[in-house]
Length: 335
Image 1 (cartoon, rainbow, N blue to C red):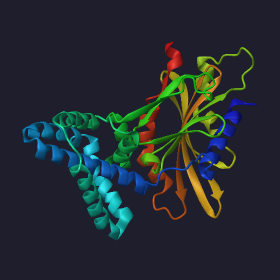
Image 2 (cartoon, rainbow, N blue to C red):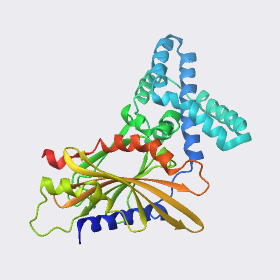
Image 3 (spheres, one colour):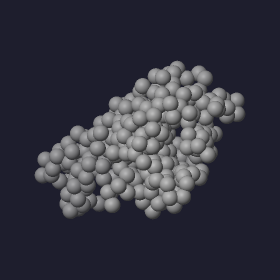
Image 4 (cartoon, one colour):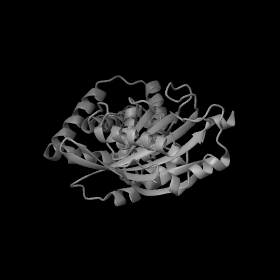
């Protein structure tokens, strides 16, 4: 099988998984995510108020701890969480907010608090501002920040990241590479062959999906691709031939990933799911290491009544794709 035909089949398999939802798994409802994150922040504030009331001499320490948290992106997120909750709950939001405050106040007021516990909590609040808090709370808070939602790449460049490494993974085919994603993106194991891990923006509720894949190449025994062969393979005309027959080629170009020849391929494909037609814009970064092809594949979906076009969505998120792809490290090269 020619390499471009092989890659075309690989692309098509992954596109099917996105359009049919076969890679999906039950995820926490957004309202539950937001409610838990908001309760966490409100509970923190109520605890600080109690500490200030019980130990007035700690007022300066309280201000310092609160400053560390509020000056971080996590502190910035509270307004976004409130806005989303208000939108989700509509007219029920004021009652929900009042009951939540009352419940938290009742719980905290009734708790015993020693000075040692108070100072330990102030230290914890500072650590929270640096990201040391439950993953589910951190991801929800970060996903509610409007500027991160508009450009998830900012979250990554500001240091709010998670790094996934394939070393020892049964689907990695012995390859060892790592890629970093925004900390707010959800992750789950891939259920289809060759898909190692899936990520989704917005704590699992955003529009961008990404898959990390590794697939063995059909090379003759003992053959090792030369640098020139690799470079030729990722030229625009070759990349164009990799698009499935029912897909539309948008763009292809030669790039370099962690010092190795690679390709960036953008294509569209329309799939029918029940009575809904979904057009997927796929942007993938592909490189080859020894006898394995490594894919970082992003996908956006466009349904019929959606206002933004695929071109507008692509312009919105391409910088995020590039920022993530630029974190790719082939650890095998440094052994």
